[in-house]
Image 1 (tube, rainbow over the protein chains, first blue to last red):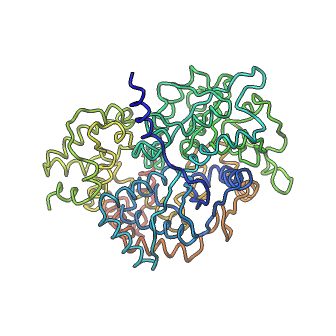
Image 2 (tube, rainbow over the protein chains, first blue to last red; image 1 turned 180 degrees about the horizontal axis):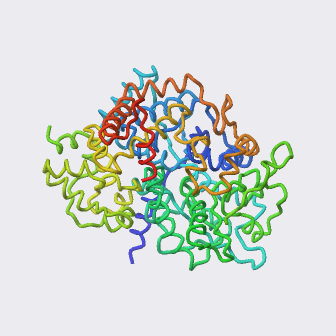
Length: 353
Length: 227
């Protein structure tokens, strides 16, 4: 066996992730469905890791959902992204921390297109100048926010309050990792471990005491499909994809799913509810559903954060069974309490079923 | 111009179709091929034929609207092609030519412009809590309904800055920033594409007898969303 060759091959799957001084690019979907994850990410970076990250009020969507539903021309997306690069420069920064996987994929697609077809970059510069008077530099480093948590996973582990283990049995929790398609399927060299051996999430899970579930449909799309979810008539496609994954992972009895794409995390959570309603099938060992975490939430749990500060009450599949497995110290009574100390809404929502 | 040449004028076409040998690996990995009557291998074959009639038929069909844009095909193609990227070019041309209104799935583009296009220009992001109405999104379940009905309190609890000025999650995007985005759309053909989709859709709705005398086409839009 030629070990030297194998080592050289592995090198292709490594990527450079900036060490500090990031520009935060928020996500359309994460903001809506996982607002606590964005807060948790910023807290981990600034308070736990001592990093500098700029949260810019001038930032907007990259148009990614519009681009992949084909209502936004490529030239428009390139120019909107060029504006974002201009904002990074305005902030005096060179490194982007991108919360959305679709945005991350689109930034890579645009930068690579500009390299391959320099006339498209020239056109984007001209368009941006004419429309806004702005100029831009391409950022030195574009990382997905999961890359950054991966990079500092050992530092996070060193500050841990909990590990990803079952407190009763002492065994590692069995975690399914789901990587958003646009993270590395288009440009494998842009993702940690590439498209074949993505370790951005499995690296976190292993470092934090958990065990990765390797199941047949591990790399299958969650089924968002952009227009396939957004148009109600097409949603069966989205549901079918997630069902295929859930059926495939079910025999391995995972304790949780973790995703780096906000859309994937939302769909794999919500479609479990739909399947329970439509087919009467509830996944998970205890038939309570399989909790779906964002990697920010998973990191926050390792650090012992209040689950209700992170937004775990916004999940359709109840995360409390997972907290109990971990032996987590939390207040179940505070789950639906607002900042004023009062119950939010007239009644508490029904989780899972 | 022949349709093939029009496709070729898009850099993504050059990037996405180098030389396809029709091995079918893209179809094997494609989630849309699993759940729809869809075969990216055949699609690539039709395009490589350069046959104007066949390409026009494709642009008028449901076929091109089945792709879920996961781009799994890109990872697996032994020749580095990307049928998912070719789909984007086909959809662009289908919309520019007005062919999209000839298929049921193509017509859905009108509903997407009305939902996502509008939200992007009004709120600065593609999604905003108020558009995820529980009645239209039963799949979101009772927890989302609770969030939706108590938006201010829930987002406040989670440190968001819902509809307020300044930085933060779900903040109100300043007028000057929305104006920059609109100016970019005007400059780069984004606004024109919205109008093109709208104009062809109105013509189609009228032809289908689904436009009211006051110009409203609610039944047409509702039909697109609900199938």
